Length: 338
Image (tube, rainbow, N blue to C red; front, top):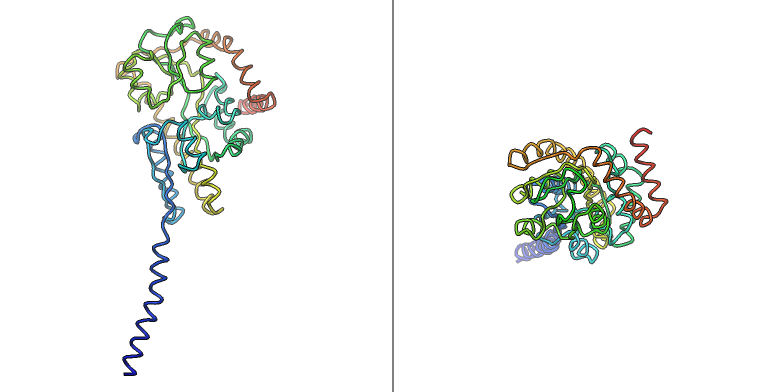
């Protein structure tokens, strides 16, 4: 009898310890972070997002997992930004240009011909003034982690080669949902049409618009060469992407968890920029091989465009504030070694 009681007590004691342990084990579920992006999985954006997800899982010991959702399945950049602000989505990467309606200072990165090369862009974006602009997002419910590279934007269309400023006249050109891009291309003579990126291929295919402007990588990965005949090398704007976190979500994370995301974002930035630049070097030849007619805008015509856009630049300075405008111009000059 005594033996039976001891056995029963031991069993009950073991069960008492096992129940909370099992419950605790079940309670420890990884944080799932939905990370949305606009391009497809095989794009530079998709590859960098995959690396970011791997770094987050590794650094957190599996306690944080990124669910990467591409091809604009969670909506356009604008829709995802609103989802982050409302706390309905945790993270995304998208264009800085579509943030201008939320944080006006982001318009500084849309300045035509602001950077001459990627080295200048890196120095300014990763420097104090780049961080200052990024930090403005927190007032609006977003946390910026790093800038990725979309790249220098170039012009494609299905109507005619653009060899001089006047060739822009009347081309129905898709632009991002951003007033600077609208005003810039209207000033250059195009019929600028704001349209989400997710609708762009269909709009080109159906001739709702004649052309668009994006970096080489995006033109290749989105197969715009299938519906566009002419490509003009203009390098008119250096276009950054930005990795964003919902502030509502960010504020629920511990400092250690926030550090995991920041560190992984920096690794993804370094990978993404190198990957994007290597791909861009091959993309132009690839587009030519796929049948696009390519011409480089002569320096004299670039100069005419710069002059034409002087009023747009003045408008950007007024929008973001003269102080910030001068800070950025100073940072660019410093990056050029002036």
